[in-house]
Image 1 (cartoon, rainbow, N blue to C red):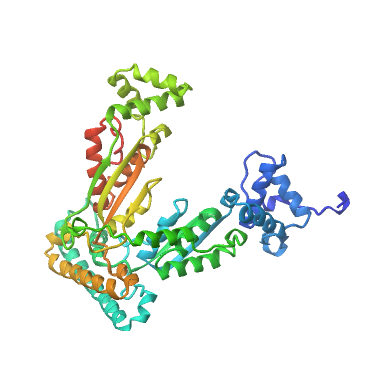
Image 2: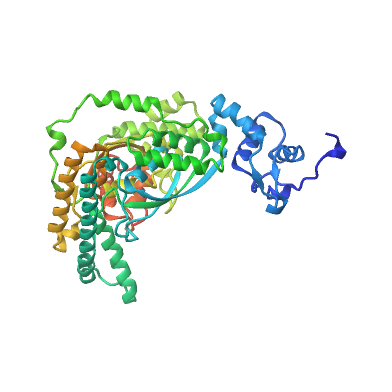
Length: 500
C-alpha cells in the first residue's frame, strides 16, 4: 500500500488520548485488544501504532454508523489466536480479553461450583441476606426425569422448605421487633426493614441448595476457558449445561479463545479412579443429625512463633534493605525476639481501615479446618483474596447449624423437623438418583472445609469477616481463628481487626 492509498484513521475513536504515556482503550472487540497487546511484546511499536496500522490495512471491520465501533473480530486476530493460544498454548494472551456475563436462575449448588471453578473470576451474587426468594424458585435436577415418583417427592419437599421459611420469617420478625433496640431517631419503617434483614439471615437456613440465584461474572478469556472445562467435567448436568450456555454467549465476545473447550479427561478419570476407595468410617458420620449453634474453626497447622518472626523479618530485610537472603537471615538470627517483634510491629502499626499489609506477609502460611454451614460456606467463597480450599460435597452427614435467634424465638421445632425431612429424602435419593441428592441439602447443613491462607490473606479475612456488619455465622468462624492467633502470634495479628 502506498502512502497515498493509506486509509485515514481517527484513533480518538479507540484510545482516550494520542500524546500521553497512559491511555484507555475502547470500541474494539476483546480479542483484537488481546492480539495488539501481544504484538507489543514482539514489536517496538506502541499499541496505538499497531492499532493504526491494522486499521489502515483494513484488518478490522469498522462501522461508521456504530460510532466507530469495530463490529466483529478480524480474521488476523482469529489466526493469531489459533496459532499462539489454541495451537501453542500461549494462554497468557487470552488474559487481555474480558467478558462480562449475567447468569440467572441457576441453583445455589451450581453457583458454588461456578465460583470455585477459577479464582481469577470476579462475582457478585444475589444475597439471601437482603432479598426474599420467591416461592417455586428452585431447580429440579434433570436426572429426576427418569424417576417421576421421586421427582414429585423432591418438588413437594422444596415447597415444604419454603413453607417453613415463611413460618420462620414471620416468627422471627415478631420476635426481633421486641428484642432489637431501636437506633436513635430511627423511623418505624427503617426499624422494620432492619429487623427483616436479620430475619432473612436466619430464616434462609432452611432453604435448599436447589434454590435459584442470580449473579454477575467478569473474567478474562483464559480464566473463563478454564472455568468452562471445570463445569463440563462436573458430575451435575446443571453445571454441564451452564458451561454450554456460557460458552455460547462468551463466544460472541471472544470467539476464538473458547475453541476446543471440552470436559477434562484427567478430572473425569481421576474422580472415577478415587471413587473405588470408600474411606468413610464411623467418625465421619458421628455428627449426623446433631444441631450446632454455630461454626467450629481451628488451625491444624500453625507456624512456630519464633520461626514465624524469623521468616518475616528475613523477608522484610530482603524487601526493604535489598540484602541477599542468607545475609538477611544471619542478621535476623542475631536479633532478640523483642527486636524482631519491634520491627514487625513497625511494619504493621500504620495500617488504616482498608489497607493491606506489606507483601512480605504473604510468606507465612496457616492451615485451617472449618466445620461450617452451607450458608457460611457460600459467603466464604466470595471476597477471599487467595485462600485455597479443600472441601467435601454437600451432605447431611455432618450435622447442621440452628441459628440462635431461631431457638430464642421458640421456632426450633419446625426448623428441626424440616432438617430431619431433608436428611431422610437425601438418603433415599442417594439410593435411587444420587445426582439429585445434594439439591435437598439445606443452608443449615454442615460441610467439611480445610483452607490454606497466608498472613496477608488472614489480615484481609479477619478485618472483613469480624466486622460488626459481617453475618453472625461467618463472623464467629473468624473470631475463633482470630482468638487463637492472638494467643499464638500476638504481635503478628495485633492490627488485623481494624473495623471495630
